[in-house]
Length: 235
Image 1 (cartoon, rainbow, N blue to C red):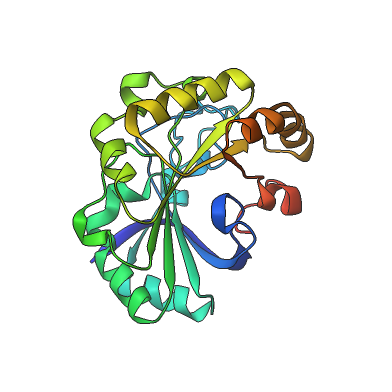
Image 2 (tube, rainbow, N blue to C red):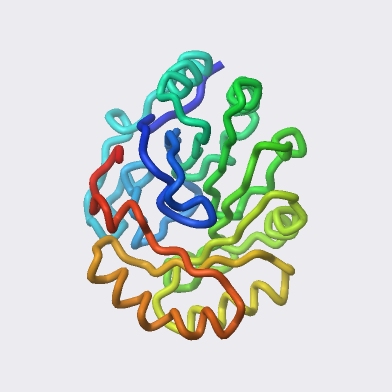
């Protein structure tokens, strides 16, 4: 069995959410069902140059069909006790990922999925040792609400035992959007992460959001990998 991989790298650190700063390895998969214009990994899906980078990436160079066992062997060789499966949208390949999860969990490795919340996880992958970091996209991402907000998927993820919800925000108006989603779907816990691909943009948005995030009783997440390494890939 094979999966569509963009890159495997590590050791590095998880840059976002409740595990920020924890050493990990990344399995970044290819393909996404959304097209956020500010996406920081457009090379996993943007074949037409529609993101802010205005670059049309070549799927023949960016995507690779990899054998599942070879992928797991490479991840385990990196020697971390956490593997982050990202993308793109990794849950679009969740059935193919089942043997990957089994081998990693059997080896004592914890797994985190970075998902946009539009694909409901199968019951087979909701298991101890697997966390779902769910990042539903707000209006400023550019896609219509009917595409980026999937009620059935969010409702199931809200009921999943080990889950965190991350929202990329710029202004306090974005926080009102988050509050509406929280009311509609009962999502919790909530982490607010400032949008930005540079230290300057992250700092700007963080300073405008922090007081209101605290007032609402939510959590703040920086983008540690950007602060440390900028926009370098494979870090």
